[in-house]
Length: 392
Image (tube, rainbow, N blue to C red; front, side, top):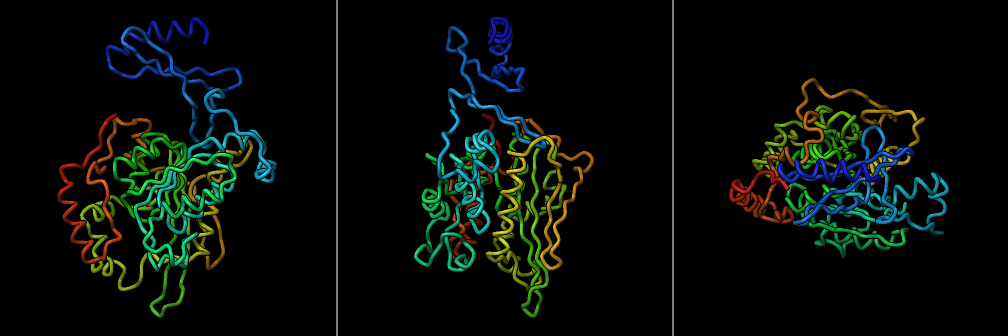
């Protein structure tokens, strides 16, 4: 920084920052289009400068400038030779130092996490409260009968440490739901999030994060239509990137506000209600090949955002694959007029998420359905007074 830069930030803006109690952040754009950023922190006598690790620029592409002293680029490794030679050392260096969060470690999330570990990512945050069940074994990566009852995040973390190609892989495995405050805060520390969940409340919260905190979120979902005679009628899966410059998940029709309310009041944990909703047919069915294709598309969408060059065409919108006709097409549409999610862009903690659970810390859906439903209903009632966003 030049002396003029220091004077402008520390001496001229420092006073108003102290008076308002707001953080003082300085940003400088270099002639090479690289950003630097720092916080000015008051130690009781003067402002001290604390440099940031990196600066993200979000939009159609994710541009990142790293502070090389605090986050040095990884050394080239023989284990990553093919990967690095595919898109170059500079892109690999940018990719490896990003912090990725995977929310939901089921069939899709476990394969997304595996792909990230294989391409040399150095920091992963895994969030899921579920445990491995017998009916997961036909589609859950790494799982065997011996793993039934284990937390999915623990199973995935153990396997990813074996798969990792980076010299050092840090894994934060968090057993909880994303709507719990601890999990939510961990997600806010990520540079990119993957949403591998099928429930409306987590989707709504991650959609909220994508805009209020400008953290790109890659969403994926599978729809399977089974006929009444038990045969496959249709299957489809789609990938949507949410965040500034993209259509939000609610406007895309991935969920509705009423869906969120149904989950909040416990209806989606009531087997009889779900059976009526499905018309007697099974819901949320999936198989390993469908999950594998979706996980691949989600990873590729992230790579397009991170390593893509400016001349790459932008498909935009949603990528939708329909299995029976075998078609993949992009649907690019803006948010609806007066979209309240889009209006929250960059508002940060000033816009609290209304259904953030600050307690109890763990709601275990792995309990038997009859007992679990009663306990969950009781916990929801107890937590009604503990729901609401909290500013930091």
